Image (cartoon, rainbow over all chains, first blue to last red; front, side):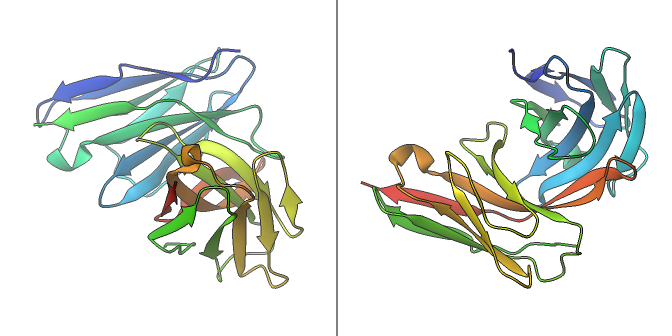
Length: 114
Length: 113
């Protein structure tokens, strides 16, 4: 099976712009979660989607949003970018939202805000 | 609201067991403990998870104390490829409420030849 794929892998944006990141989960996986990783804050949970519904959301401002499509692919959007949004954004997929909940992570999208 | 604490770094001789501790003293009764590792800023890789009982798989063993306030990840025969940052994680929630992974700050393990 192909792993979790994320596009683009690298992105440079300017303050005030918006950005959309994409995640394709492993085939058959219906749960997708997003994480932000920065040197200062480490890995922080953004949100979880299951069957096109947001199940849980981390402590991030409303500028961070996401959605999941019927084929389980997911996108996250960050509006009005700030310098502090520079980070590695990781997507992870799981077969379900319960049980063992073993998450498989993608390689991430490296976002740089200038 | 950090739920786990880990030592920032550890060294281990190649071929020896690596024992990585984690404190999760505020864990709730229905929250699982997961371990992942991350190499060179790649996506984290699943290692093992448990709730109350000790667990073992082909990669590692997980020892959880009886009071569940701490756990230890054991890599039985460390190799150079095991050099990575190891994260101890508490998973809150379930299929009804949604899930949230609380990552610790991680332990940077260096396996020395």
